[in-house]
Figure 1: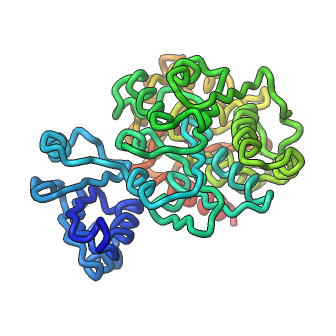
Figure 2: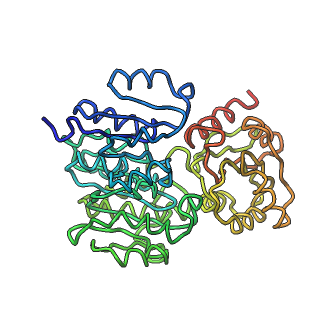
Figure 3: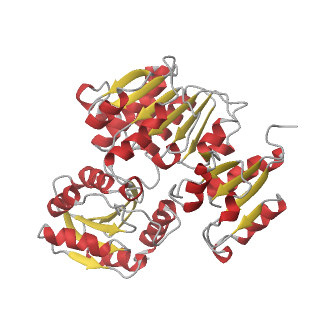
Length: 433
C-alpha cells in the first residue's frame, strides 16, 4: 500500500498539468476528482475518455462545492486563481492547496535547477539544458517550458531543469531547488497579483526552502531582484551585464537581454560542473527558442518574426530593441488579453521604432488609447488574427519587419501563446504563395 492509496485528491483544471497529475496519481490508487470550468464540449473528447478509463471523476462548466467536499489534497493548475470561493473555503477547512510543481517535487530525488523571472525564463532554462547535455549529463527540461514537471521520472537523470511561473510558486510548500535563478522582475500578471510587491513575494518563494548548501543566481542589475534575494539563505551568485564574462559576439542569438540569459545559464552550468569551453561552444551554436524573437520567413523583402512569447509590455520592449537597429521599419501586431500593467514605456518606444501598429483582441481599445496619448496615430484595428497578418504584409515594404509581439496573453483568441505563434508562422509562410 502506497501513501497515495485511497487519498482523495481534487485537481482544479483539466489542462496539460492537471491531466498529467491525474495520470501520475491514479496508478497509485489515489481517488482523483477533476473540476474544470469549461463545458465538456470544449474539452478534447479523447482526453475526457482517457480520464474516465483511469477512474477519474469529473465536473465541467464551473467549480462547485462538490469539488472540495471530501478532498484531502487540492492540486491547482497554474492558470486558475486562488481567490475562487471553493479554494478560500478549502483553506478555511485546512485542506492543503498545492501546485503541480509541488506535487511533482514529492516524487523527485535528483538536483533541481529552477528558473523564474518575468522574462527570459524559457531561453535560460533551455540553455542550461543544452549546456548540461553538451557536457554529457542526463537532463530533463520541464515545467512552464513544455512537459509538466509531474511527468518527469528522474531515476536515470543527473539533473532536472524546470521553468517556474509566479502562479506555480504561489502554492509550493516543500519544493526546494538545488539552484534557483531569478532573472528579472518587471510588471506582469498584475491582474492576478494586484501589486508589484505581491508579485515579487510570489517569485521569492523559489528560494524559501533553500539552505546554505544551495545556490540562488540573481540579476544584480535589477534593484527589486537584489532586494528580494537579500532574504535568501542560499549562497548568492550574482550576474551582471556591467561585469559580464561573456560578450554578445560570443553568441548566435541576438539582443542584450540574451546576454543576461546566457550569463545566468552559464553560472548554473559552471556550478553544475560544466567546463567553460563547453559553454562557449553551445553559445556559438544555440539558435534561440521557438516563439521568442524567432525568425520565420522572408517574403518579397519583408522579414517576419514570431515573438508570441512576448506576453507583457517589457517583453515587447525587448523585442523592439533587438530588431529596430535605429530604423523605423517595424510593423507590430499588438494586443490580446490584457494583463493590466503600465503601457507608458512601451508606447514611447513604439513611437520611436514602429512604422505601424496592427491591433488585435480584447486589449485593442486600451492599447489604441495609450498610443494616441503618445500622439501615435498609425494604428489599424484587425477583426481577426489572419486579417492582422495579411494587413501587416500588405502595408510593408521591402526592408520592413512584421513582428508579432503582442504584449498580452493569448487566451482571448488561442489556447496558449504556442498556438498563437504557430498560427502566425503558418499565415506568414502561406502569404504570397
